[in-house]
Amino acid sequence: MARWGMVIDLQRCIGCYSCMLACKQEHYLPPGIFWNRVIISETGKYPAVTKQMYPVLCNHCKEAPCVKVCPTGATTRREDGIVLVDYNKCAGCRYCVEACPYQQRTYYSNSKKEYFPGQGFTELEVVGKELYPLQSGTVVKCNMCVERIDKGISLGLTPGVDPEATPACVNACPVKARHFGNLDDPNSEISRLVNEKRASPLHPEYGTDPSTYYIDR
Amino acid sequence: MKQYEWMVKYTPQTEWIEGRGILFWLAFFFIELGAGMFLISSIFGVILGEFIGWLICAGLGGGLHLLYLGRPSRFYRIVLRPQSSWISRGLIFIAMFLTLGMVHIALSLWATAPIALLVIVNIMAFLTIIYGGFTMSYISAIPLWNSALLPVMYVVAGIWGGAELTVGIVLTNGGLVELGPGMEELIRLLLIAFIIIVGTYLIGVRYGSATGAISVRGIVLGQWKLFFWVIVVALGILLPLGVAIANFVAEAIPRVFLWASIFLGLFGDLTLRYLILKNGFYSPLVPSSHL
Image 1 (cartoon, each protein chain N blue to C red):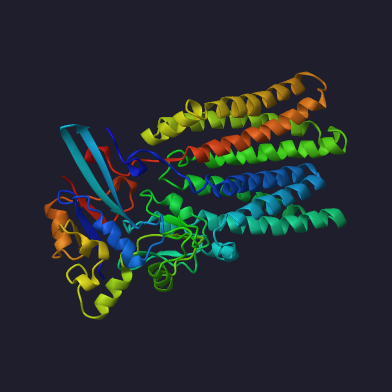
Image 2 (tube, rainbow over the protein chains, first blue to last red):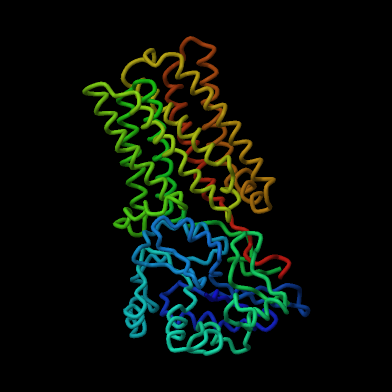
């Protein structure tokens, strides 16, 4: 069984936010909800200023604290490593939000919030609510575009190789800073990147064994 | 150095204290206080205290827990993961405590409650008091909470508060003679234990990690220092301590001091819980060496 993971090359990332926007568009995320974020900071003084870009998302950890603390069983980890939330089971206790050391889970509280307040929902928002019916009062997070992966595999495609089976954020990156694939396959591109470029996850000392790795500058 | 603050600096948790998170803070307090009051009242034979403790636990504690949930109608699902979730375990403990507690109260009023039932109910009451602390201490992402002393502190606070409220009930109905000297001794012991545990807890977290140090500094020296030193320490701990010492030395002290000790002790405990929730910080997401 595959263990899906991601490698983000910080040497290539230019902070264009394409991944963040592609994710928002792919899942029709409501206002204020982001499953992919890009942290940008600057260090130094003019003219010697350095900019650091750090895309962050749910790490789909192997030892996910959110899975352990969920009292209803809404948050589960599939055999292929994808951590999912079943919105029909979530009671909104937010224990998972507190437990996630990477702070990548969001409590979705207001389903009536519009992108253009006072003007009603746009057509895109209406379609989004039908295609991706997030429930208010539940916790939401990145699902690694599980629908794309599952459909792609059913069509015989390879996630990480074929764009139709690859997460939207990976496809959107214009500089190919994001890579997706099977961490348990030593011959996959991301396994090679992890080994050769010595990619490391965020805060390995937390003991969560994340599936997202970063190639440092 | 300008930094994107959101995850590059120490970020405070918000879901369990901001907005509707206030309900969470109050829910834990009342659950533990009510169970503590029931436990102490049942040991000292104050049936009214048992009933009021039960009501506080069920009505205020349980009600506020339900109001806090994003989807309260799904609360029954919360018992499904006791093998790994402290909230699951907690709801089971609370349900058993409330059910058996009501049976104990009814039997105490109309017949004789078996000792075995009393023991089981009080075990459930103790587990009800302690589950909140374990729920928080399980979260390793927030060093201020991730301490073995946190559940101990909450248990002592819950039992101490319950004892104080039981004294209040008895004061309202007459004298304290029926409680005997045991209650006084118990309250003194609990208060001293609480002082030692709070001090040890804060010192332990302070030196446990950089993030823990930030949290403790925020409580003790930061923007919340007045709340901590005036409400928690002076009014919530030192005043009750003074009353307890005076009660030990003198034969009787004015009731107004007893009532002040009860309410300020509870208010101090409530404030301390607020400060612990408010100052729960996460470590910076991006390692500083990467910036």
